[in-house]
Structures are given as C-alpha cells and as structure tokens.
Length: 272
Image (cartoon, rainbow, N blue to C red):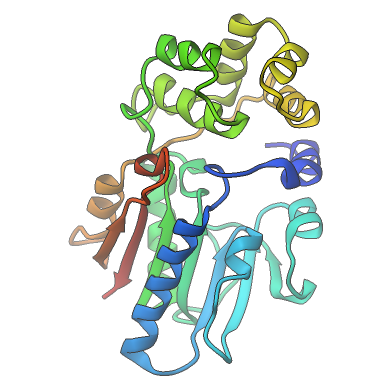
C-alpha cells in the first residue's frame, strides 16, 4: 500500500472501532497470555507489538516490561503510537531489525492477514521464531470470518434491516462473504464495489445508518487499491506454526463471546 494510503489511514484511525479494533474481551485474552508467560518465568518480559495498536500498548504489562513496537508505516507510527517515540521501530515484520532471541512476548492485533498466504505468513512465523527466546510466546488476534458471516445477500439484507452495528462490522462480514480461500484472499476494493452497488453512494450509507460520514468516506481509500487481505483460520495458523519445521507449540485459541467474536480468535503460540 502507498504512503498516501497509510497517511490517510493514520488520520482516520480514531474512527475505527471493534471488531476491527480490539474489544475488552480481546484485551483480556492478550493479558491472560502475558500472565501465562509471566507465571512460567517470574521476571519482566521483553515485549514487542507488531503494529502500533494503542490498546496493546495499554495492556496491563508487568512492571519493568521493555516494550517496543514495529510498524512499516512512518505515518502510522507518528499518528497512532501512544508510547515513547524511540520505542517504535520502522521496519518489516518479515525482516525485523532485531537481534535473534531478544524478545519474550510478541503480540499483534489483526495484521496477520495482511501478509500473503502461505508465503508471507510462513515468513513471519519463521522471523518470530528467530526473534523470540525459547519459551517466548506470540499472541495474535486473527480475522477469520469466512463462512461465519453469511452470504453477500444476507449481509445486505441485515444492513437494510438495521442489523449491522457499524461500518467496521459491515467490512468484516463482507470479508467473510467474499473471500473464497486464504491464498486468493479478499480485496478491500471488492468490498467497496459491493457496498456502492447495494446502497448507491457513501453519503446515503452514512445517513441511513447514522454512521460518521468521515468514516464512511474513508472507503474511498480502497476504491483504487490493489491490496489483498489473506484471512487465515486459527487452525491453519496453528498447523503452520506447529509443524515439524515451524518450531512452535499451541498454547490456546480463544473465541471472544461478543457478536462476531467467533470471527476474531486470539491464538497463542509458544516457541519451542
């Protein structure tokens, strides 16, 4: 994605909400994963956030935690990261500017599916295995809506009946309806095309549902985008990570209880 895309996303990030940003139940699952590591090691962890999600920065980290973030967009770091500027690194998740074995905990909210499947996601898992110390954990919230959000027709029937709570919920449901498989993925451009075909224009969508017009018009960012999301099931992430070559073991898969929570499982893996 272009720098201009991320510059606009950084400006609009404040408008995004659950399920595309973590809800309290998601944060509780991340904190349980951190506590599990702490109970096994009894020392302050060296932690890394993939991305600059403010909610992950604000988790109840153990006293003395060394916390850093890694993001590929300078604009997102500048606009969204709430921590000390020096703690946020600019770089690639699949080629991290970090020493081998230097992290105990890595957390990520929603970004796993932005990498290609299977190649990009496998590269990330290999890089995580490198930077994590033995016994370190990786906790990630996935977007895995395929087959769980209804058909395109059902999504728009619910939208017309007022049964879609937010633009973010509409996006997630359409991802689930449109993605055929993880390798092919789903293009945000497809999502926008279906929305416009169904409702006519962005102003009408905002007016009909009482959604912030600024947020709805952010869909314009995706109209010409060639990006794809590759939304992977929890069972597939565990399979890739816990294969003989993967070097991880599964700790837990948590499905939060809120609406659409089954589409947003939190997977925790331990480096062997």
